[in-house]
Image (cartoon, rainbow, N blue to C red; front, side, top):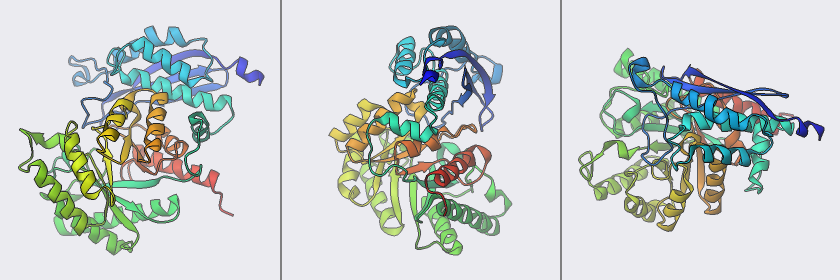
Length: 417
């Protein structure tokens, strides 16, 4: 145990790197006697108004999206308080970060400054205990929910709409969720369906239909939800997975909610529309079906179909414990979309997962549309025993980094004999 006495933070470096949209984000390098540990912050496009706030520079540089202010906060405020601190206490360090910021939404120092520090500390903490990151996270929860080592089921975003694409689709993500026995088989199915869809789009709509959105899913110029779903079902069938695939939707309804209407539909009309869709298609999950303040809409939909499908809160919950408790009281959903940059530190993200498990909710760990090659969320999903993970399509480096890490974790936990 002598290593514990020397496991202190020696230095914290921070730098700007580019995310998958070509915008700056923050990468942190934590220097310790055990080595250096890297982590970087993702960034969202459809951002909930209650989530932790990024700090951007403004001005002309990078069209206002520079991250030098966040980096300065790391170097001048965070680093001096953490250098010399033992890295084996995630909770203590996260509490220091929260205290230094002093706001509920991390808007002082910026979630893009705080989060990568918290992530890097978590990686270092795992190294101190000579544990894989997912095992370290599982141990840090302090309780075991279900069987540790269950792999999350991947949700592949294969058609992009909404804020993630330049087409007329209101719904933001059309995802395929293979229902096979292992993660590796589900990844194979996702890849085969993705490429089959590409062939169909190119043949039926021309080369421009295989252009991609922010997350790497195809962004064809479709105008209706049914068009997208019919194309996905055709790809599923042609790839040979018609009996082994479900559909998940991220509606991101806040993005097209205006004047108390969802496009041209009222809340009641949207409810009827969702019920029609889940009757017609093998939909297993709907995320953010209503505006982020429309708890009543969520509650009505839960009453109507919550026993059949997952009603997932993203902008509604923003990985925030108080919002999760409020949703439980109002029976507004039965699933949590967990995004670590919505809350800002790993300890709070894990606490959100613990509460969701206490409520018997499903958990879907999620990437953001502006991603890096950091694969932290893969280990997080396994460590908290999440039922699902969505990290985009089975294509593009920043997306497959997460899926490839999950392949390695599955190999580690369930070695092929």
